Image (cartoon, rainbow, N blue to C red; front, side, top):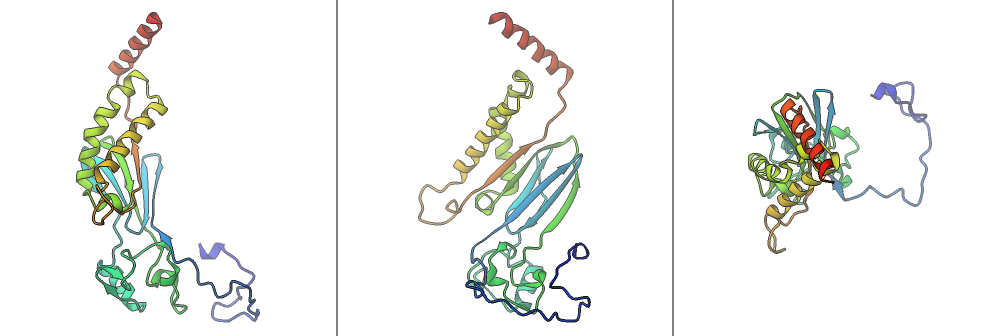
Length: 244
């Protein structure tokens, strides 16, 4: 992508420095925000699923009821992350970078990206994502994207099992009775997400698991409607018109 980007400050030679003078302003000493965010993105294109992740949010797919992680949690204790952190001049204490941040990749968190002699991907904390591409199949049930507040309380398989249990009760009959009505389907999936959060939330704010912020997205893959279900929908629609 660098070959597609042009800047007037760039020189013709990569090894030469430009002669532009630095411009000083009221915010020239601002190093950037000390806050940051993880990023976990899933893109569905035909039968292809592309997942990009930076941080400890996680993307999980349920395939025939089995949980498969499509992303890797970027924690400081991972060998590759630890090596980068130490080489960039950072340290790890109690599982946290410089005793502060408990993840190794993030957007923002500029205080960990101040080494002017290193490219972005080699800073103490980098926003470079891992990218995973998988082919979808008929056995795929749903996709979950959630932050670590969820994963601190439930494993990937525990969450998939929980969703399967509650998605059946929340969506039972909806796809048939309402003929794949999108609003009804979204409403039922939202109810499942609420149940997950209720399951994970701690009873008090004294600390520990269940006290972190929680964000979750649930995407259910559409399944082909069988001829029998189509007939049932037609009969129910006709019956509803007669009763009205």
